[in-house]
Length: 164
Picture 1 (cartoon, rainbow, N blue to C red):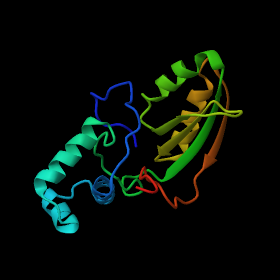
Picture 2 (picture 1 turned 120 degrees about the vertical axis):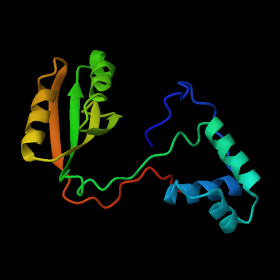
Picture 3 (picture 1 turned 90 degrees about the horizontal axis):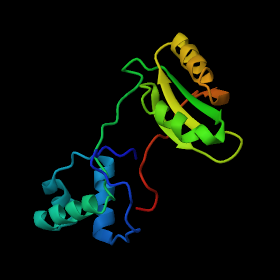
Picture 4 (picture 1 turned 45 degrees about the vertical axis):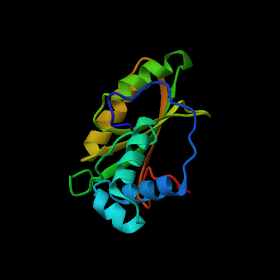
């Protein structure tokens, strides 16, 4: 999940173990973050006060980092999704990746191992937008190569954690 909390601390606290109540609350909120405390109470049979306290602790411990929308990109006109792998001169990787954060087409940025330094998930409305974007990346001073793949069909796109 991309953090949506601008006040998120840089240093993530030590891993926390979750009990079954926390896991059940998270499962419900992952399906619909707008689920009311009353609905969670009805599903889990625990008090609203307990639910409030548990969610507050999950937020304080940065297990829940924020709440976000899931948009229908096709209905918004974004017909093209691309996986773009980028090879960057190692000394400048962080600088380049920080710059990608400012590009509205970029949905996700991953610093990776292997031949490429990073992988981007990007969305576009028109083929010309893809062309212009890839050209702009290749013109970056420390970018040495890009490899692009158009997504034909999206089968799963979630930040939900398996096993929660």
